[in-house]
Image 1 (cartoon, one colour):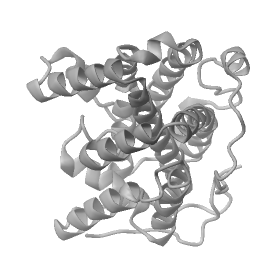
Image 2 (cartoon, rainbow, N blue to C red):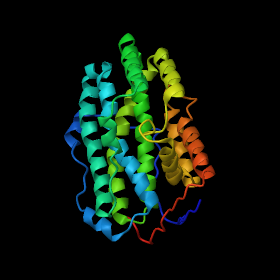
Image 3 (cartoon, rainbow, N blue to C red):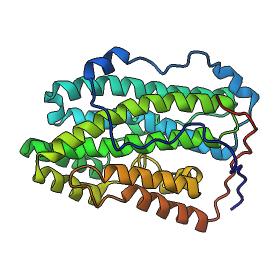
Image 4 (cartoon, rainbow, N blue to C red):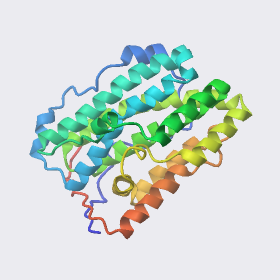
Length: 302
C-alpha cells in the first residue's frame, strides 16, 4: 500500500475530551437548528485544489452515511422515542441537519469534478432485506416490551455521533483542500450538538436501570458495527477507517471515543470503536489497497 502524508501538520480541529458534556437544552437546539452554516465559504473554490481518489472515496462514504440518517430516524420513530417530546423534537431537526451535511459533501465532489455517490439513493429504492426487517421488528418489539430498550438506541446514537466528530475532524486535518477543511469543521460543530443530546439521553436512561444497562451491553456486543457499515461493503468501511484512523493520531481518537462511552453507566467494558476499526484497518493493509493522503500545504486551515 502506498501512502503519502504530512505528519507535521497542525490539527485543524483541536481535540477535546467529553468527560463533562453540558446538559442538553432542546429549546435552544431547535432555535439554533438550520441548514449547515457555510457563511463565508465559497464551495466553488474547492475546484482549485484537487481531491485524491482516496479522499473522494472517504467523502462518498460520509455522504451516504449522512443521507442514510433518515433510516435510523425511522427506526427510532417506531419505538417509544416517539412518545418522548424531547426526543421527537430532536430527531426531526437532527435528520434535517444531517441531510444538509450530505448535500455539502456531494457538492464538493461535484465542484471538484467527481460524481457523488448514488449508493444511499439506491439503498432506499431496493427492497428491504429479510434480516433488516427482522432487526427493525425486533427493535420495535423490545421497545414496547420495555421502555428501557430506548437507552440502547440513545447509547448507539452517542457512539455514532462521537465517531462522526472525530472522522470529520480527521478528514479536515488530512485534506490539502482548504474548502474541505473549513466545511468539515462546520459539520463538526453540528455533530457536537447531536452528540450532546444522545449522550445525555443515554446517561439518564442507563443510570436508573440495571436492565437498561444489560440490554444495551448485549445489543452493542452482538450488533454494533462502525457507522455506515450496514449500508456499505466491508471493503469501503475498512478503507475509510484505515484512511482516517490508521496512524497513531487516528488510533488515539478511536481510544478517546471508547473511553468517553465507557464512562456511561454499565458501559465500563466498551472498546468496540477501536476494536472494529483497527480490525478493518488490518484487513485493508493486508489487501494492499492503494491509499494516498495528500501533502498538506503550510498554512492550510483557519
